Length: 282
Image 1 (cartoon, rainbow, N blue to C red):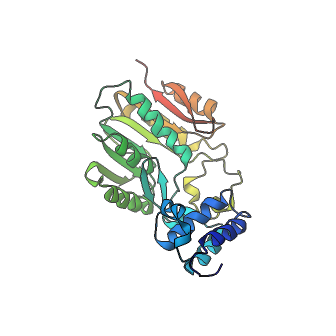
Image 2 (image 1 turned 30 degrees about the horizontal axis):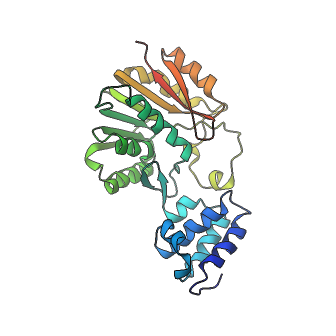
C-alpha cells in the first residue's frame, strides 16, 4: 500500500482483500480506516477518493483490524441512531440491533401525551448509548444512566457533554436498580444476555468487556435481577424496553409476565426478535 497521491482506490481495494479474512464488512472497514487516517468523514472520502494522498498510518490501522481489534476501538467511535458515541477499550460497542429499542420508544410515544417521556432511566448505560439516543429523540426529557463500570461512565459523561446533553443527564455507578428511587416514564436496558459457554467472534471475545456480554449458563441471570425491580421504578403510564437475544423472547417474556407486565415484542431490521416492551396492567 504505497504512500502516493491518487492511489486511495488501490489502497482501499488492497485493504478490502486483506480484511476479508477477518471481517464480515471488509470494504466498510477499509473505508472507515482510510477516512480516520485522513482525518475526514467517510462520506467525503467516497465523494472523491482520488484527491487524497494515503498516509502511512493507514497501513498500521489495517494491521490492527487484521489482528481482530474492533473497528470502533480503532477509530474511537460508533455511529448509533442519530448520534455519534465515543468508545474505547473496556466499553461495550453499540450495535445497530439496539436501535430497535429507540424505535420502540418512539412508537410508544405516538400513543402518549405530547411531552412523554419526561424522565428516562437507562440501566447498564455503558457509554450512554441508549440514553443519549433517546434524549436526542425526546428533546424535553431528562435522563439517568446507571452502570457498574466507572470506565463506561466516564465515556458516557464525555458523550453527553459532546452532544450538548450534560445538563439533561445524570450518571451514577450502581448495580442495576439497587438503591434507585423515583418514578420514570421510560426505562431502557440492554443487559448482558449471552450464555457463558457461547462462542463469540474474536473481535468481540478478545476485546469487549465480558461483564457486558455474558449472563450465566442460560444468559438470563441479569433479567432475573432487573425485571422484579421495574414495577417500583415506573411512573403511571410508563414502560420498560429490554433488549433480548433473538431466541430469548419466550423465556424473558415469562419472567416479565411473572412480575405482572404485559409484554409485546419488536423485531430488529433483520426480522429477529430483539426488544420486549413491558407495560404494567391498566
